[in-house]
Amino acid sequence: MTADNQKKGASRRAFLKGAVAAGGAVAGAGMTRAAEPDPLITEVQEWASGLGEGVDATPYGMPIRFEDDVIRRNVEWLTADTISSINFTPIHALDGTITPQGCAFERHHSGAIELRKEDYRLMINGMVDKPMIFTYADLERFPRENHVYFCECAANTGMEWAGAQLNGAQFTHGMIHNMEYSGVPLRTLLTEAGMETTGDLSDKWIYVEGADASSNGRSIPMEKALDDVLVAFKANGEALRKEHGYPVRLVVPGWEGNMWVKWLRRIEVLDGPVESREETSKYTDTLANGISRKWTWEMDAKSVVTSPSPQSPITHGPGPLVITGLAWSGHGKITRVDVSTDGGKNWQQARLAAEGQSKALSRFYLEIDWDGSEMLLQSRAHDETGYVQPTKDELREIRGENSIYHNNCIQTWWVKENGEAENVEVS
Ligand SMILES: Nc1nc2c(c(=O)[nH]1)N[C@H]1C(S)=C(S)[C@@H](COP(=O)(O)O)O[C@H]1N2
Ligand SMILES: [Mo]
Image (tube, rainbow, N blue to C red; front, side, top):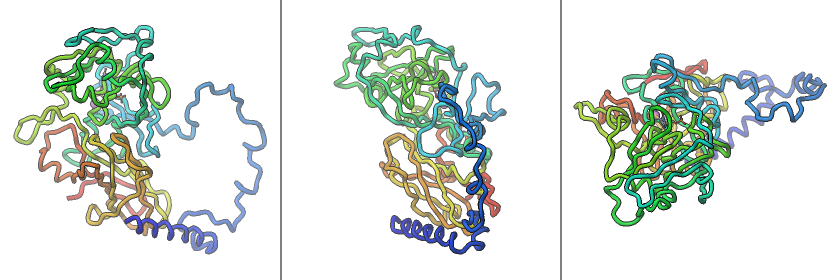
């Protein structure tokens, strides 16, 4: 397929060259012809006739006002109030893989709290030799690591089980963000507290709690706790935003967002799971036979086309079209993404913008020569374990329709001739 993509690249270059030479013939493709004088090129513009703002105008910058629709949004009917609620990342409008904190989805069970570094404490207790209380300053004195990871709420795409419902990638797939975290491996802190990190740890667990009223307590098996879990204080280079757990949150790579405890306050070492609210009545999946699956921690491989999509329609005529989207897996690296324009009958291999990184978002592109006809656009992720993202029917067959969580099925956008797109299902 690589050769095929190269062929596509070559034909695209030929097309763009043709655009300049052929003049009028290209107007329909929406590309500007160089033949006519363009005042934006030939005239001196207002912004070049005076001075811009000084460097003291914006001590901390916000996106330019023309981008003010690239914001988190919530779905009003989804939750009773906005305190115990969720909003969604505008993934339809972003590119690359890193999510800016300012528009990264938020999920709170009892609202985002304001906790000063000076008032911050992390306690490690339970089955450890030296129960410890760390201040923020203490945490800063341990060796740090930097890693990029996605965080996906287990409920992402949860409203789509019964049928295509929400019209936009932001709403169907926006309970996800991807950031570079700086922090201390949890292993280091457990060792500091005198926890024995070798030998048979299969019956050992930790219970983690946040400082907010909900506490959002979750049990994590010790094997994971000692593997790649981070106690993080920076995201994308700067302090965590209040809404993402300032000053310290837990990062549990590849595992459901609910376990990424914010405003991290206590870690207890135990010889079994607590079976808290968040891991019994919530964050379990009731199957068709009424039995619930629990301990469904890992986020399976998943992908979505972010553009074109309902909130990001095609705004030009036939010709070169960039199809792009995101893919991720809680089990490791994304190795391949396929794209279908006919509802899954035929697949083309998309181009990964970079080699897949373990438990982080991958950006994919497929450049096509769109003939202007309607498409049933889908993407399908493969991860390094050999797992392939399932269709909605395949997933429903195994999981029934009682589930909320862990819906990683293939998404379909019906892209119409006028470029608008709609959330649909194919079977
Ligand atoms: N203390 C605390 N941690 C929490 C939560 C919470 O309500 N309180 N919500 C959890 C859920 S359900 C998710 S999906 C993630 C969301 O992280 P974010 O708000 O940074 O996107 O945080 C998790 N950690
Ligand atoms: Mo969540």
